[in-house]
Image (cartoon, rainbow, N blue to C red):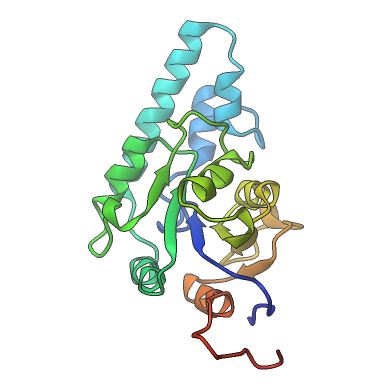
Length: 218
């Protein structure tokens, strides 16, 4: 896939589970069943809507245990670690934006051999004081914190909530969809890729050129 000419890229914001990690470590159908969360309703929003404080705390604890088990079993997605280092080698900033807890993300990163928390310029989780995806607050915060314009940000994720967050912030969006998942039908995104390596061509089109150079067709 070839990206359009004319944009500038300075920051790549990745979703975590199913994007930088291999899909399948977290089966949210299981935790929905445990909590009584209706199908199609995001788990975080369901928990936040529980009126009884004690029941809400129990539900949150169950989600934390579920995520901890998934983090321990997770593995890096194919080429994810190499991609992060490739982006950094091109002077791009790299961030993580996830609805998971910080503890779960850090535990999952222990299973990475070629990437560590220090390789990311920013890691934003649900523990940070801002609305989670699909709100665009996390993307905007990452851009502001790292000193870039939201229009110079690329959001990469494997679910509609990631695309909605990127759109809400005014960022470019890339949907990682290895298979024809019916849940992703009609997802509003700028680009759709089947594996992370395809991202490199899109990124290259947004890199600044050396002085005196012009892109073909300019």
